[in-house]
Image (cartoon, rainbow, N blue to C red; front, side):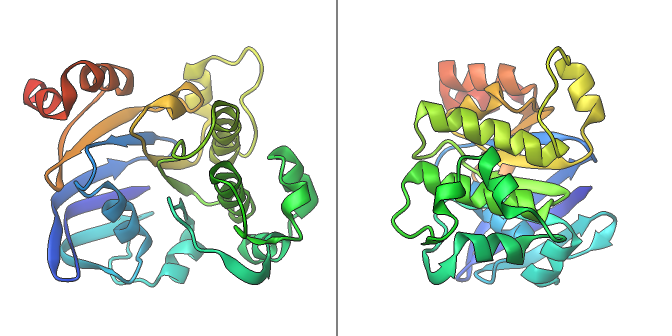
Amino acid sequence: MLKLENLSVAVNDRPILHDVNLHIKPGEVHVLFGPNGTGKSTLISAIMGFARYTVTGGKIYFKGQDITKSSVDERARLGIGVMIQRPPTLRGLTVREMVQICGKKQVDVDELADKINMVEFLERGVNEGFSGGEIKRSELLQLMAQQPDLVMLDEPESGVDIENIALVGKSANYILERGMRKNGQTVKKYRTDRKKSGLIITHTGHILQYIPADTAHVMYQGTLACSGNPQEMLSCIQKKGYEECVNCAL
């Protein structure tokens, strides 16, 4: 689905990422841990093609196609979707209109909004006066309409209370599978059935309670320093910190 080969990225001529290699196969969800300022958000932004993020080396492949120089809209049409930490407020554009614009095809906006408790926000300006949890839900609603094949979430738990974390997690699963996990369905069977892929940045790991992840990575000093089992790596980070976790994996 997504393959990064020796990807290096700079922001305003300042090198941030160095020789990042990553391969996310169809149906896989990868989690990205790491301390603040080490390049996690930069990685997602570079994959999406945002203008500030300059690829200085390496390649980005999506579905076997080199998209290193593709525009943001081209990547979105190919099937890449992102939820960023601090989306802008768009006055004069309602949430309903935004969801219709994002729709891969004609969608029932009210039906999707009902799944994520956003019906009452549809006629409001995008993110205008929204709380942290409401912004996350608005972003997820747009992704639900887009139906991307690769879902990238940048700290979905940030600024969200416990109740909204559960809703965010379940909604992200809906996007990944185009439906909620069935009652009685095992995690192993769920992963086998999942067709879409994900890349999720998390500090707390709370989102892992709702989204079965396959692989975790620690980004440290601008590169992917180690990879492993998501729960085991999270436990190591909580007990020993990022530096010790990286040293243990080496």
